Image (cartoon, rainbow, N blue to C red):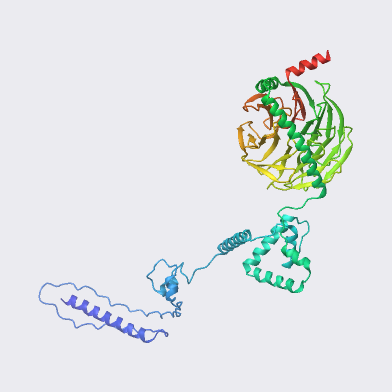
Length: 579
């Protein structure tokens, strides 16, 4: 019992000591407090009761150490509690936290910051949206199509009427964007009204009134030379069309005329085609070829910029007649005149040249803004058509060298061109996968033939007058019926792009296609089935041509060789003539 009482007294003493320390610590928070140790008060010794002696448990007095001073804490500043609206729109994860806690939660409105990368992305997005809205607004505006009206509108808006090197369409686009910008700023109506008021107050001349009342046409007025050319082409085409229709009626009504037998004979002749002559044409790859109207001369051109004339009367050997040097860049095409031995060449130096058979330059046609593609003579021999990568094709007068017509209409580069046998129509094709048929007598685009999925590189009218063939980079050749204004047949012709397409020029009984798969193929014009494959070249074929009597076919290739193909019957006839 004595030991237990001693322990209770010690516990009571420790509790009293702790209470004293707490009271002194609360009394002074700044000054350090040192407590003097207090000796414990021992209770009086009570003699043990009678009985066996019991050893006492030693008790050590507790050691009271001085306490360290309490550290000073700086005052805590909390951000003001957000308002009810801000607290409702806070990005905090907890919707039922109070405003004070929302300020300390990461991701809340009080601590939300935008990084530099996010700011740049947001600015780009806003700028893209502004550009899109500007384009939509510009597309909805009515902009004049006549260049004079466009210039007058720019002058009213206080802008330069034209910039250096600016063309008509670029000037119209600039006016459209300017009007859209003013419309977005809310200044267009105010500015236009101010200018109209100033003009109405300052102008009293009747010319200005007439200018305001003038209704501009959607076309551009042509020159007197173009009008004369259209009249000449109309007269020429009427005669040719009448002869073609009269011949077609006679063949239809004459019981002795067997068209199927003629087609069978022509296809059999084409099926017997074989290689008759091969000649190296130039040091560089060849890009174009063309027979003369009588088939006695052959013209070729190459990437060296040089065109050459060859004599084909002594086949199986061909001999060079003359060399045509004058272009500064690679030659892209060559064509013989249908009425005389004049040759036209096109080049990447943006010019076309007219030569005689002796190699003398007669005319140089300048005006295109980019390299030229294909060229073709009008059936009358008076006009020359050229295509270019400046998205236009042009009509030139052979006698004067004047540019008669600059025709736009393709959204991308124009590559192929061909004239109708009557001379009334011309067809163009380009890298926009579109073929267009134009009426030379009126200048209108009468057909837009859509069907190819890749650029069109070759185009040809059939002598029957109503079929048109096109070939392009989708490896197909399409036959179009001009009467039905739609595609008549699609030939999966080659394993690579088709570089040239041509109908047999006499009756159009068969069709020849040349391709980058190193082959040229002959197809029946009756059912468009394959007749013959001409495969000797070692590289892609760039061009080919057919003589007027369909007795010879020539192909040129990147392997720098000229291949002449002749039917077996014609070879026998030539052998008999030699004998």
